[in-house]
Length: 372
Length: 268
Image (tube, rainbow over all chains, first blue to last red; front, side, top):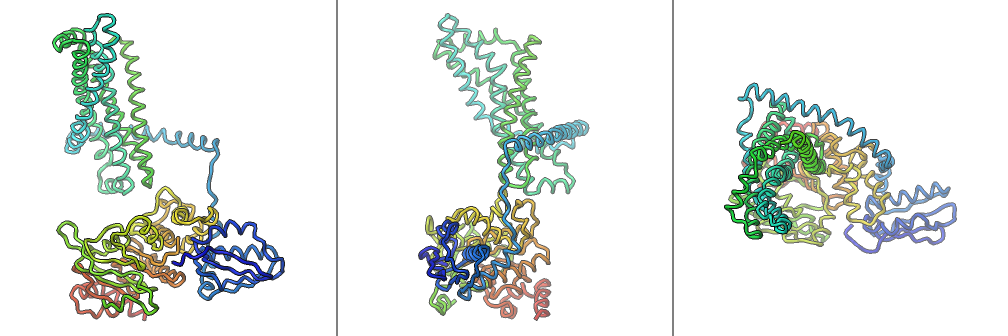
């Protein structure tokens, strides 16, 4: 079948149809399209002569068999002459074709059906989410009751991976964020001669909102996705099942340490982001508005209350729990294949960022009602 | 390995010729001047203990790994250093069944089998579907298996689906990596028969990498026994069972080897 040669062809002369060329997967393409409207001889009996084909493979034999069947359906009698090796091939194709049955029809759902399926699926999933959160709460309660059961080594490892390793990126981004806010504010503030209020601007923005939010989004992208992918892959390779069978509840080993580690790491990262964000604002204020570091810090100390700082840092553990639980939950939802791991990882990041922002909005409403 | 062995009676080159291959992973020597020749139309098996470099050799033959030095000729072409178009056109004349199937999880079995056809030929979608269904049937799977995704199949069915994909383009040379690993004895012996059957029907040359002694006795025309980075014995199983080499003797006359040997004799 290595002879490239000319493609498959059928030439009709009188009552004889001669098969020529390469009846192989490579050579069949053009013939296949022509076969739909082929001018067969009108005679009631057709001699199909395949002795001159250059090569034949199973695909060729299948197409030839299709030709024979369609001619016979048209009421003609077909006599077939083949090379001996092709004879055997055709026999095999015929016997397998009987077993093969019709090829499965491609399933294509309409819009309405897709919406319906999606809704049913979402409805079915909802109790699953609740159950997962419940199981986590139970595991956490067990951990509180008997702290020695918590896998502290795992917690430390996750703390290092999600917290310490995120310091450079979090620091850089919050520094730049502080810088940008101060620059943006500088134009407006200098117009009113209120340059010194840049400290209030940067302080309130970073401490109350941007530091916790920025840090949470970075961690959702870095760690939440990693949790989903890790647990998802472990599910595909049946490691999760293996854990269960050796008597380790997967939640206890895989989820709880991550939740605990992230709830510690995220507030710490937020404090760190506060510091660098304000530093960034300070740098911009001195270069753009001529506010010295001393003046900036003096104003900052008088404008900020401790509650502004605590509001920001206090949100962080909630965000952390959302990110860790969402990532792990999506990881456990992986089924079967590699694509599912990718899809669940994406969903975990999108959902946790979405939830973090929604919860942040809820916090803002509550805090403003309470006047904090 | 004599020079005359490399060229067959009809003047065509042997479908697979490996000569003097050296491979090293870090400090560990895997192949130390390994040579072998596979004849057209035979079922050739690579046997040997775990970790003797069987699978590495397979990976080198199908261009997934490059040996340090030596020559590997597949269907008349030197594959060490082959790349791009030439490598692709050679690979499509070769079918490979991976040990764990390596089916694409997001596709149904029929779509998996259709992948090489869609990728490499200009056939219409309907014909590709029909040919895929035919190959699924040839591999001994029921018709409804074609519409399932690999995760829904049992281990044995997944192997058959992988085989169906490997023969999608009617390859001249078929590689099977541990075809019976992880199968129950009944499915495994079913697989033996399937391989022989397909080889006769399609005129394939089959290279099996396996340490399943039953499979070697039942299917292989010739077996190359690997050890110490070389081929320490080549021949039919009956010939190998008389080998004096300590590694081969250990393999054949261990408890499992003896059982398989007795089985094979009873069948005769």
